Image 1 (cartoon, one colour):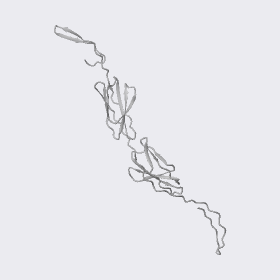
Image 2 (cartoon, one colour; image 1 turned 90 degrees about the horizontal axis):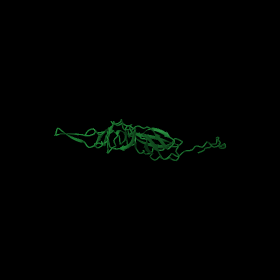
Image 3 (spheres, rainbow, N blue to C red; image 1 turned 90 degrees about the vertical axis):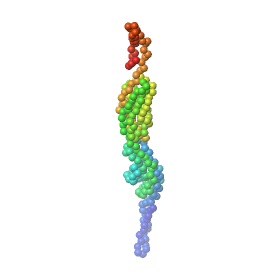
Image 4 (tube, rainbow, N blue to C red; image 1 turned 60 degrees about the horizontal axis):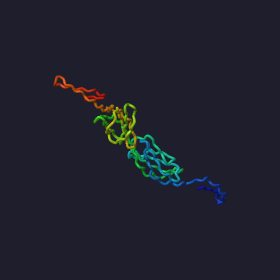
Length: 239
């Protein structure tokens, strides 16, 4: 809109019209945005995005935590926002679009709910034992909020490697080589946020199977007593 005016006296004699006023523009109120989309990354970061609305200069965002009311109004000039290192709670978001005259739409409907899960605590050291001579049994206590565990092994104290994922808290390894073994585990939640690794298990050692002894020698003593002897075999604990 532009305007001009002229002045008139009591006899209805008038001046010319003034020059035009400055232009003022009434902007349309932006339409209500669709519900924003929320997602979680890196375990505790929230990413929020929404579709742009024509005629919008900025947006207001609100959050609802754990089903509480809406609060935490913040202003954004883009159609995305990221929030790092969020607490372990449930989150929903809504937005409204505003024009350059600060006239705003209604708030959108709520986003999908995203949940930041607590990071599991560090497991206690696992327990390792040997059965059947060369089988290793490994177990550890379950940790609250854990969805799965990572296990690593250290063979002959040569460093940690061999990371494997497990949903149970016990594992068996059959027919293992003659070596010394230690294990450690860490717990992870459904968003792949993990605890530190546990302390190491007590070492367990698979011993080599002794070689077959050479033929023993038998001797008769005192006509009716028999003695028997054989060469010792390295690694043998008994015969």
